[in-house]
Amino acid sequence: MNQPAPQPFVRTWWLSAALGVVLALVSITAQAEIEAVENIRLAAERFIQEELNIKPGDEAVEVQIGRLDNRLRLARCSEALETRFPPGGRRDGNTAVQVQCEAPVSWSIYVPVTVERYAEVLVASRTLRRQHTILPGDLRTKRIQTSRHAGSYFESKNELVGLQTRRNIRSGQILGQQHVTQREVVSRGQRVTILAENGSVVIRMQGEALENGILGDRIRVKNSSSGRVVEGEVLESGHVRVAP
Image (cartoon, rainbow, N blue to C red; front, side, top):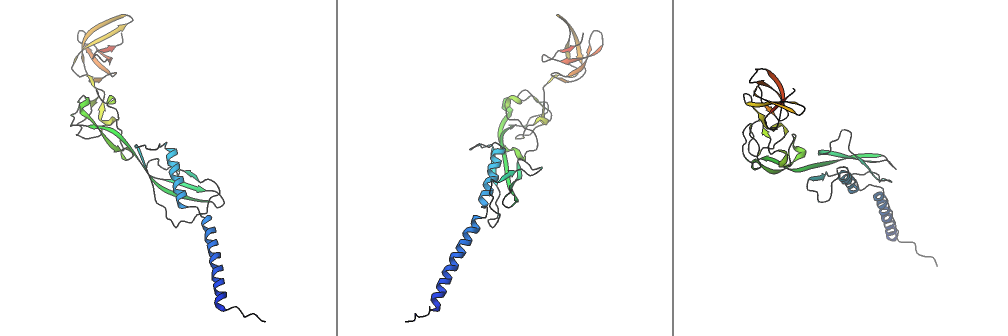
C-alpha cells in the first residue's frame, strides 16, 4: 500500500523548527565570541584600583567608571585584557584607561574614568591679617576635592602653627605655602645683640637691624659702638651671629 504524501503543513513545521535551532546555535556562538562590555569596565576598574593603590573602603579616593555602549561588539579576547593609562594620560580628575586585546583579533578601546581625591585640609577659621602669627584656634578643617584644587594645602596644624601670614586671609580660605612664611624674628630698626664667636670665646655687642629677618636669614646689622655694618645670621633668640 502506498503511503500518503507528507502534508505541506508538516514539512513547514519541521523546517521552522530546524531553522529555529540553527538560529539559536548561531546566536549562542555569536555571544560566545563577543567580549562582554562589563568585562571591559571591570578590567578598567581593577587597573585603577591597583595602579592608584586604592583599598576597599578608602574614603580619600572616589572612582567612577564611565558607561560603554551595550551594543559594542568586540571579539572575545583569548588572553587577559591589557590595561594602561594612555600616553600623557592623567592619574586623577577626568581621565581614561586604555583596554586592549591582542588575540585572536587585535582591538583597543578607551574607557572614560573619573578619579576624585579628597582630603581634610586646613582653612582659616576667621579673617587673618597680614603678618599674623598663626595659632591653633585660627584653623579648622574642611574636606575638599584635592584633584580639583590647583594650589598647595596643609593637613596638619603642626605644619602651620607659629608661621606668619604673608597677606590677609579670609575666613574659610584654604591655606597653602604661598600664604605663609616663617615668623619674622627681627624687624628693621630693632635693637639686637650681635654675637661674634671664636671657639669658646663669645663677644657680645649691641647693634641695630637694618633689615627684617626670619629664622636663618642673613641680614645687615650696624654695630652701635663702631658704626660698622656687618652681615649675620638671625637666631631664634633674635640675636644675630656674625663671623669673627
